[in-house]
Length: 338
Length: 220
Image 1 (cartoon, chains in turn blue, brown):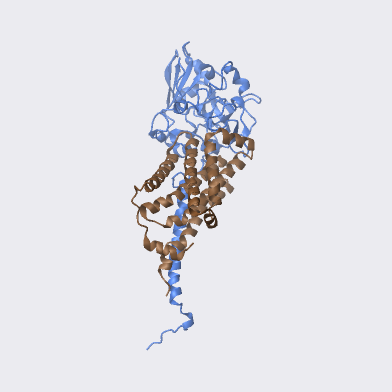
Image 2 (image 1 turned 90 degrees about the horizontal axis):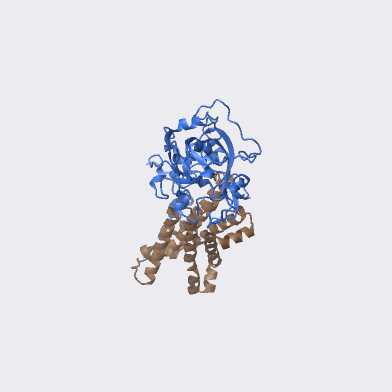
């Protein structure tokens, strides 16, 4: 008969401890599972219910700017120092300009445009010029880009949410286009419209705003040399999240006036409706001039956080462009016309 | 032979596990902040996330009693105090981030914000309501106040949660879907309590075996 190994009885785990060991393992597993479930659930809520939070977009690997679509032989002139077309303030990094902005057509989070705007097709693209003009027409975007030399302008951008950026835009004065299509004497305002296509702009399937996005300017505002139609930034074609292929930039007004992915510019006699004032008339007006004296009903506009900076800075009247634009509003009550 | 029931209940691991899990948001935010991974506007991101987590804990702490009434579960009651204290912890971090990091301890601007902006006022009021609750969260304070009075005082948690949800609703620019989830949850939890106090709710029987275990293992 084979001899079984005979452990000294002192090494035998007492049965109660043996049972506890199994309970211990079970409880350890339950502990790990519960902690992970609680913690994971909280992280899931923090990520807005998504599996993973999107990382801010980084510039494409070929970070060298491709030539803008329209061929321009002459180099793009940088803004003259001391002019309102430039600034010596530090520019906001490309990844923040393209990775953090509002474009509700692609979702309401400020990282949504960078994540979701891949579905937008900026070519082929047409812009309809209509209404009170002698030369109404439907323009191919590349024809439009060929009409005017592109300029680089470094503007401050002040969002109504009290954050701001400094962005080198590429484009041409809106005034150049206005003159070229010859407004009639009845043209008092310009009404802009964004593309309406929920296939390309999935955010339009949600009814968070009345689609399509519409914006407007008084014609003297549109003729002001600072008002700009933009087709690029940082020397490159405009990225989809920033409103490709054509957007408006009016640097003395809150960012939401800068309508993106424009398909229609209509010249009209009456002040046109604008999307945010349709959504909340007491919070967002037609003029939307940057004004530290007139607070948003729910938050102060006196200060802003420049993206990349730690301390808040004071907001300037007309976003610092008052010297050049304040005369547009002489005699107007800017508290009432906010 | 030990009573095997003593070790098979859910209790020994529950509190430590919930405690560790509840620290995940704090640890995740701290790591992301240190690595500069909070995005282009890290202060706004941190502020929003801390506020969101505080509200999650506040609503979770208010769900414990309704869960017992509806399903007879008693384990949520065991972690209710911890959930409430975590709500206070994250609310405190939220308020500290707002005053210190966002406003740079500019007390004049903060005072103007709290008094002039109704959304900041209700948020601040919600936080103030949580202070006495956190201060009286110990067993000693329950005894000192007497359970009836303590319970009455801690009804303030509902006030804090309602104000917290209003704070959230008034904060967002347009998309109300996320704050509305909280509003609906809170309304449902309140409805259970109201129906119960009117005697209109058929209470579930507490799971007796379960309670038995609770009593033996964790007689605090």
